[in-house]
Length: 335
Image (cartoon, helix red, strand yellow):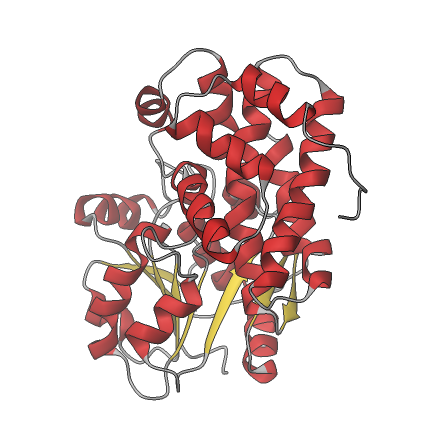
């Protein structure tokens, strides 16, 4: 992959903008596209995303494009950065526009609602099985990447050469990308951590304390691993950046929209009011329902995620959920 070959970044929210900036920092031509033409025009004029990353100046090699075919022209790589509910529709729109040698990566986290499919499964259905694909995930907040603060993440791909080339292009003095072949594990880590972060926000908002938070993180990691292994993932993946790293980040820092969502619920807001106040995608809300369905189909026990689901969708008071978790039968920690 040549650094002179453009990369198209599709999705101009906070994370898509941050990744576009990071790719462009090394001088690689980047074309940033989104659906909101007015917002894109404002970004092009200001040379920054004033809504989401107002202090992050666009590098000279980053250009904003309002037309998808123009963004894709001459690109060798495409990076999709949209919420999980929008992934299939965008991939379907993208499919007829792709050249046969174009590679597709995504930084989308979460199961597809209804089907319970992971992003790579959706991509295979919409793009075919021959195209090189990859997933970017890990403990990253867009604002800190935009500011150039030291960051590490994981790129998972079945093709080691493609994973390595993406990692080299993305890495810089303050950004390090690691590679993995475990797409399933990396994607499950990115999906489950969002629901657990809602639980962490609820717990902290209700004043349950640090002991409760760390128990939630530790046992949540166990649930994440249990589901991942049942779906064919490698258990070691969940001890890395896309598992434990992302889980700790999103459960403990208020930059996490999922954690803030839980805090707002603990303060007495309804789900609808909390979502409106955050005004960005809160993946953990939909993830809780998807995990409930996926775990049931796989016959995998995930009591923490189940309680988050019941609080969000069955109006179970959070204090009752904690009481139910604490009264579960005693068993070995490794079970």
